[in-house]
Image (cartoon, rainbow, N blue to C red; front, top):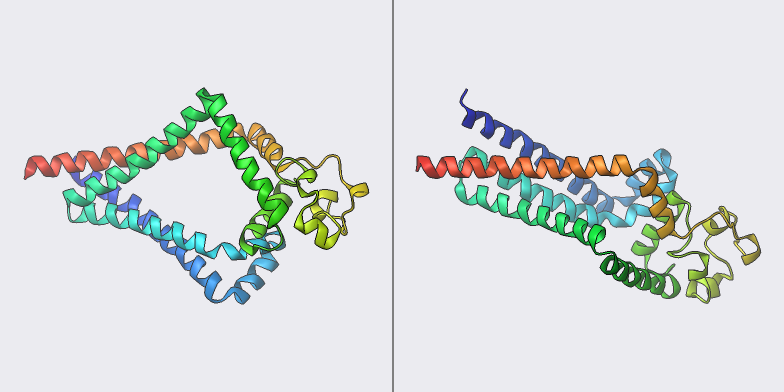
Length: 240
């Protein structure tokens, strides 16, 4: 078997896995939106704390659709030896890779810029918690899941809910702020419950090796996919 045939097989297998994974993710998203009751029963018995994520079906559909597109481009480009598909696949992966590198550089090298972004994100989060938490189901579900999984309260802390619509309607904070005590009053606030931003920083600090390994693995796969696609593109070009 020639080197080109091996590269072609690698490209097909790798992108075939991406395609199947994307189809599975999209299928789950469609199932959640069409037959949420059955999904709730299964999810509730397996992981009750994740019941709140049932409203993110559209996110699964979008991610699944993108993965299917990438897998289709890679597989068809390899099987049909299509220069156009291979180059389009290469360009999309390259854009994603550049965006990841740029984001990492901004976070690591430009602390002032990243701080401005964090403050901007924090302002948006606090605004939502004070005005729309408990009313917008999808984002409220995401926040509830985040707070329960990270054992945190609000973006900066429980004070994010002071004078909020949620507090005025219920005269209490979310139960997670008091260690899952309901109703959660100011006197019962658990001092050990951090804001979700600090809790996320703590999580990253304690799992830095795992997070770094996953990030390096993803970058390695992207570089390998770009290399294989470019080599195949050049080989097809030289043969043509």
